[in-house]
Amino acid sequence: MTDIIRRMLRAFGRDENGSATVEFVLIFPVYLALIVMSLELSMITLRQVMLERGLDIAVRDVRLGTGTAPTHDAIKDRICEEALVINECSSSLRLEMVPSDIRNLTTLGGEVMCTEREEEGAPVLSFTPGQQNQLMFLRACLKYDPLFPGWHLAGSMEKDSSGQLAIVSMSAFVQEPL
Image 1 (tube, rainbow, N blue to C red):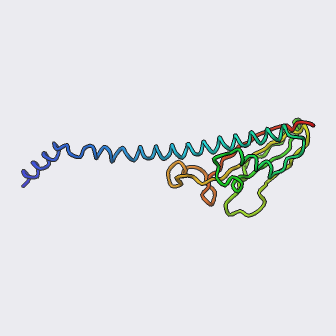
Image 2 (cartoon, rainbow, N blue to C red):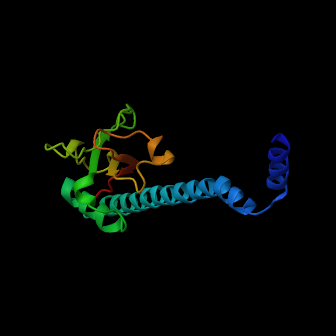
Image 3 (cartoon, helix red, strand yellow):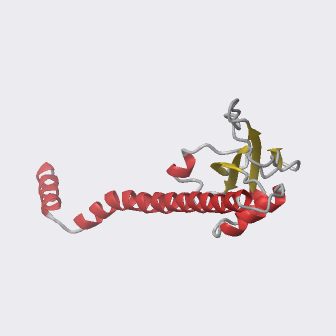
């Protein structure tokens, strides 16, 4: 009886049928995870770049504008107009803008306040338009839903209570005089 089992095990050990399937089963999940994480990371990078682009163009318009004080909605609309690939930009973007004195520097602070999906309130934490020749700090925070929320990359990032991730962009400028 043991002789029969030994012969069957030797024959099974010499048989190479299905060996490619074993390699595929071991390697395919790694490749799939790399592809999914690279797609997620590329979308995060694309959103970050487009938010930076929109903020830069909006700040340039404010800086070189007619000397009128910019409104929150005008800056937000300009950012959303230039950030081409961001879905629901107006509802997921939050702006903070504070004036500062060059001799007594005050910044925006450390904690970034972004909108939350459940939050129904003021969309602006702090927004002071500033005067001519005044240093201004502007911070834009965008909330978005990850493409693959259950995968490792999105799962390892800090999320809010609704499962959204945040992208933050900052800029500083001085308003030109008339």
